[in-house]
Image (tube, rainbow, N blue to C red; front, side, top):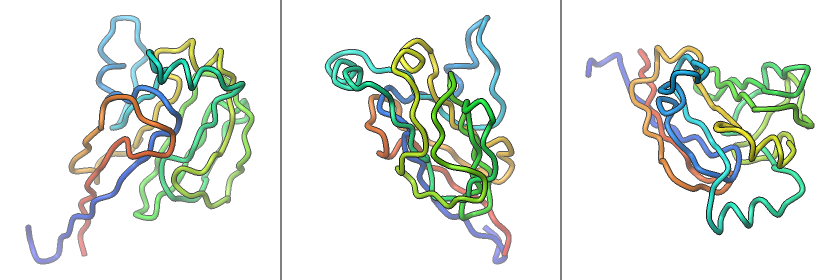
Length: 163
């Protein structure tokens, strides 16, 4: 590493309770939608965790990182944040949701930002997808695959910056 460079490590939390998996799993199938950038998806969990989470009337979607809301889709199917390190983070949802945020709001990682129906959440292979649309400064992304509660660490990333 040169004297005028540094790396910072950050974490992302799961926007919903469920099974967290790397974006590459979504991009692998023939009929799958292609997502650009780096990121991860969350889908409904099976087993006892799925049973417990599925008994709630709606799924609360949390902010995956601290940041400023830069956009909210009109149909409630997603939003974008600008993180403290200046990166854009996009969250795409599998259906419409009841948004509780708007552009300009500041949100904390793990804070509930919207609610979506259990039917939409459970009926999709990727109910929530978190991506860095421009991943040129991301040097490493490690996704913690497996069942996670909303607001718990789902991924860690390193950012490369010049001083």
